[in-house]
Length: 560
Image (cartoon, rainbow, N blue to C red; front, side):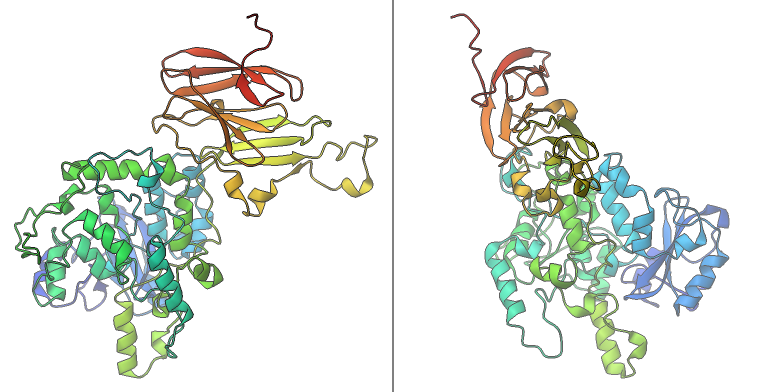
């Protein structure tokens, strides 16, 4: 495979423009020959929201992106390249039709979501997969990979990753985390007066070429890209990325700042160091802008990246990450759900809103093109992304004379469901049997989970110790299905929760280390039983469960 220069196919390198010597210095090796045997994956790409791009991944982990005149040319090129599909990582056939598939088709056909749910791949790997199939790439600054802010505490000397208050609410877009600012955006949408454009909450975007260069200003080739786009000058020192804590505060206060992060925040400590000694100037408070100021809990850039990555992979993030994905790649990106979620952006950022080929006026065409060059929205890949919370515990107490015969399930993120069991279904001759019931399934899914209407009554939110692997041994359900006992908490307790309300009813202490497993003896319905708890220090304790009082208490049979 050869390239004949940028005349035949524009080689894209972020802000790369033809003829700019300073930038072309960083594209050495992009003009030449590649062996067909070195090609490992081929992805169709969008460029300025037009489906005219193609990205080719090589065996040496580099990639090259091209922009062609039209889709027909892209298809011809794909069928002229080796039949490698999008590679072997995503469980997809190595076929040319896969290279030309839409992001939604790739998502539905891949096995990556199932692997993520089974915890076979990390949150980082899954987010990179979604970015990649959605068309986001390191080769296009306008569609650079996007990652979420996951922490909120950048001020403390120590960071406790077991405290919920240190984590961001991933169910809300970055612009809606601050209640006051959320009101501002909601009012903007409701009082929109521009007749030339539909209403939106945000006129800026969470991912743009400028924001990517803002984060990566200290490392090449991004320094050169930034200077080339700004008349060979750095930005005003007060606007330059100089402090992680300040950037977080701005994203919560400044109505023009809704930037999310990029993957480098989770693996590249060099981005925070001014190793080339650039002169970024003085802030208004006379502070010299040099290296990025880190949170007090990170003594060096490597500490920040390590702890930030730990937070990304924590259970607290894992159990709500799918909600952020819904906002960026899923059903909350457009339409009524986006309005309700305060997640509507300028209409020109959405795919399909403008067909450049239909615009004959060069001024209008250029204005649309310029706007698209700043920010681009991802395509919707699925109506609703699943949670990374596979069922880890099942307890079936289905005797007919129970008040609530049910199969209780619990996920790794401690979301439980009380799925009612219909004892008489299909049992001809059983008491209460009727022909009307005979077509029903024996298990009725918990309506609060099925309708997503009351998950707050089903979610155990108390944080567990991050070193504990949540599994089936961390849960016990009482014989009447009315209570769940849960262990694994950082304070060395195990706890009792009501399955009806989801509320905590008792905290039991006694161990000197984190409790890692629970079990109960057999008992009659609603009756007393024994509970045994085991902790990480190999200690076992025996407890008495009072069926009458629904608590861990004293055994009345013990002699005083």
